[in-house]
Length: 117
Length: 114
Image (cartoon, rainbow over all chains, first blue to last red; front, top):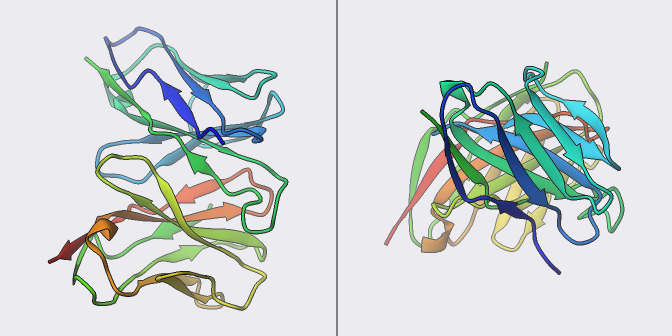
């Protein structure tokens, strides 16, 4: 069983640029969620995709957008980068199916560290 | 809006001893899920334990157990026989019944002393 993978591992951008982060979900999972984790803080929910549709969104502006593909992999796009966007971006996948203990439980990838200068 | 609070920014425990991490949350929902996640310095978030709000029985996973008090909106994590590998940031998390809203607490950094 392949776990959640994310690319790239690290990224440096300058203010005003655009960035795309990628996530491959765990085998069998059709739901992907994205989180922003600032240094020393807990993850903040950005949005979730289920079967290629946005299925929930946290308190993030529209310049944070996403996509989910037919193979359930996902992209997070951030436009007009700001200094405060510097953070660890986590992707998590889950599935509404399976045993009660695993149903809808999120499994996280290693994250992408984004630095905005 | 739902909130999750972890009042202990840092905790330490002696190896082989027991430690309890606190978590309180606020929600008006009756059905939801609660989780404890561990984030070691390597940063990959790992699920420790989960609890469905409709279940009165406290969840257990080997050395990890929770004390879920629904009326008090409290969800503490007990780690028994602490090991050096338990050292990490621990996050308490809430998820609504529809799976569309996830809220994490600020975390508790646990140190395990040899």
